[in-house]
Length: 143
Image (cartoon, rainbow, N blue to C red):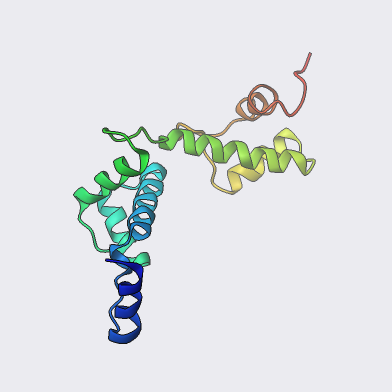
């Protein structure tokens, strides 16, 4: 259907045919891909699409959309929850360190905010020091 016919149907008949355009489909593919890569499963993505965007699709279509957006034949690997937790912890440590907080102060703030180790364990001072010095390289190693 040409753009002029779509515009005519919308303006004069009140029928919105945008859902059949490539722009709509590519947008849906991207939304499905982004939600999948964050860690949502197909059923959660279907609910989000329906609630927030008004798209109604099946759970099978979610995985097809992800593959089509990534232009692959198998689902891409996503970032696991442990990596996400580790990145959030690193971001928060960096912000606190740049505010001039010491190691013990950073540990206290993180525990108060409910942070845990990336593996779900309790945060301890050696973990904070190692992340600051080795992983984030915010200060030189102690000698």
